[in-house]
Structures are given as C-alpha cells and as structure tokens.
Length: 110
Image (cartoon, rainbow, N blue to C red; front, side, top):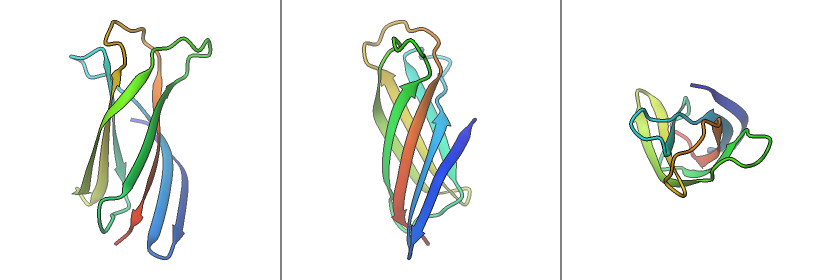
C-alpha cells in the first residue's frame, strides 16, 4: 500500500516520524478502513501515535470515520508495525471514497 513518509526529526535518541497511508477496506466489512504502517525505525518502548482519517472527496460529503484501534508491534520482522482501524461513524452503506490516515509517531529509538 501507499505509505508516504512526510517528515522525520531526531533529537538525541528521540525521533518523530510523520506520514500518510492509504486506508483499505477489508473485504467482509464495508464500514471499516484499515492501514498497516511498517516503519524501518525500531523503538526502545511503545511510541506515542497520533492519527486522523480523512477523505479526498472535494465536495466534502464523505462519511466520517472514527479511529477505534491502534495496535503497535515493536519488532515485526525487524520493523515497527502500527495497525490502525477506523469505523464508519453511522455503520451504514457508504460510497467508495478514498480515505487516508495521517499519522505522527514519536518515541525513544534503539
């Protein structure tokens, strides 16, 4: 999937990484969107993750999503894996808009 790193700042052993990831729809759940972010950076402990989900619909009438799960695996195949799941707020049939997850990850690196 599309993971676009938009920024990386490191001061001492603290790093902040920002990016944008294309959300995908699981085949069995039309009201869910997920993204599986894998970062080359390994963290010493669980980093802070801040995320938002937004759409590309210019008209502005796409359905709102609520992030309900952020799972962090500190050593997934020698990477940091962050899985983010969002639910459509009204749990109804939705149109096929493109949704992105913007994220910031900050923590102590190894």
